[in-house]
Amino acid sequence: MKFIFSSASKWQIKELISITTSLGYISLTQLRSDLQFQLREQQKTLE
Image (cartoon, rainbow, N blue to C red; front, side, top):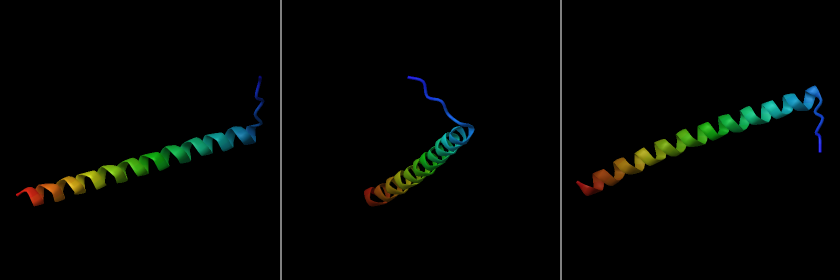
């Protein structure tokens, strides 16, 4: 099957990809900072 995209839908796909990429990046950095915070809290309780 061939999908024929108009220029508008191509642009929408590019937008979707960039939005998902930036959202994924944001959630990754958020996760990492949460993990670092949890690690620091654990070290405090161990001391």
